[in-house]
Amino acid sequence: MEVLHEGKGQLVGWHDPDENREYVLHNKSRALKDKTMTASEAVTKFIKDGDFIASGGFGHIRVSMNIIYEIIRQRKRNLIMAGKTAVHDLDLLVGNGCVDRVEVAYSFGHEVRGLSPASRRMVESGRCKVIAEISNSGYQWRFLAGMMGLPFIPSRNLLGTDTGAYSSCKVVTDPFSGKPINLIPAAYPDVAFIHVHRCDIYGNCQIDGIMVEDFELARCARKLIITTEEIIDNEIMRREPWRNVIPFYVVDAVVEQPYASHPCEMHGKYFFDEEHIAEWLALSKTDEGVQQYSDKYIFGVKDFDEYLEICGGLKKIGFLQKREAMRVPLVTPWRK
Amino acid sequence: MANNQNARYNMREFLAFTGSNLLEDGKSVFVGTGLPMIAGMLAQKTHAPNLLIIFEAGGVGPILPELPISVGQALTCYRGIAATSMHDVMSSCQAGFIDYGFLGGAQVDMYGNINTTCIGDHDHPKARLPGSGGANDIASFAHKTILIVGGQSKRTFVNKVDFLTTPGYLSGPGAREKAGLPSGTGPFRMITQLAVYGFDEKTKGMKLISLHPGVSIEEVRDNSSFDIIIPDKYTVSTEPSDRDLEILRKDIDPTGMLIGK
Image (cartoon, rainbow over all chains, first blue to last red; front, side, top):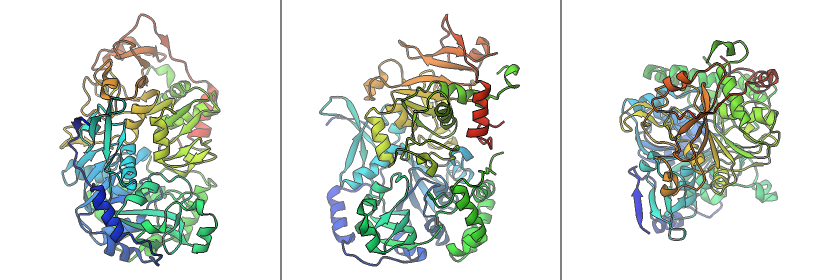
């Protein structure tokens, strides 16, 4: 195929498909093993400085916040993050200096709450680099190609634009239609972390609500950390297997942590903690404020359970549960 | 906007209403954060009860009881017909199932190309913005893309966008097809606080369709760095009814987080 155009973005997380098959053969066991461990153990064992990491969910929805806080607590450095649908997850990691390179589909924004002060400041001051641009389905289909064990997958987005020019995609002449078509390179993140509603000790997972990109992301990550609201018995998983969306054989760690997504939303269980997010957005306007926030909520607590207590404990959680069920009205304290 | 509007409605309410008017019943619309969501909800609660609203993270066909903060929120599949994945909904977009795409933008040019990536040089930006998100995808695939830019000015309506994040008509007639984008796609309408614009059939340049009440042609010209085509015939934009405003203020956005002053 004639290559018409090559994006100048840095290619991250790509592996030759044969190399990846070797990796899967030797590293992703099909044996049923108890993979339960703490967040601290999972981050120590599976996340190294310089890794290419991806967070499941949607930036501030169904996020493994306990893993994110642990990455910051362990002072991991030089991480490359998939800015796929990145909101609160990326803002904290970039703001705290753990992630210094991002491939951006959507990053540095908090949707309707406004732009993210901390991560924007890190980019604008040169402390965090944007190494490539892409779009939401561009990233989604990077994971699809990885899931399929392919080097790339074709698509018809990104054509003719600077987003495409700054991506790591290539444009070729499609030999079937004769038209230009975009080729999206596969992504095999070094580590992904995904929060789910329930799973068993082996890693068979159920997610309520939308999957976002997690069906594919779970299947292309070299190491997958699952955090879960609750652990249930394997027998229950086997009763209605069509409800199981991630299979045990792609999972490397299972961390049981109720409310692990706080302050982000968890479908059907608890709403965004808008008060807490507003506190972060206000404090993170300065480097000193980022330090102040992190000293209080991350470095000053020994684990996520202690964090939940200083966030308001059962009373706060009870309120967030009611809000998710729309039994109390929405409040938006970040609105000026 | 001229002062006689402020008594009854504010500019954002007017934008949401104007956007909602473009959405036909029984069609599908891909909505992004903010005003596009409100326009979709208003349409669903008024003239388009069977409007199929689709969210990029996998929420399909919800009947929205309140305004979502995020396009990935649980609400986006509330009483929906499906809760799937980004792969599913974006594939359906690429395969031709989406009638309308609804986008906002920081900078636009006369061909409806949008910048939401950076102001200034890409590698050392003066201001770093969030990037494409789903915008590049939606603008590439939707049959009709509707753009909303609340603050039309010389700074937002520019001759050349600093970064071409999302495709309008690119460099002009035929450019989309030449690049390989699906045929028949491209910007359909642009809505700002001053007017509703379309894109000229032949030249693909932005063209006036209706002026908002109390707005002059001079204001349209003064608030654009490029020449907007002013045809011989154009209309005055319809104003929201009291019922539309009641729905916006009481049902859709009671905290006023998006359309409050």
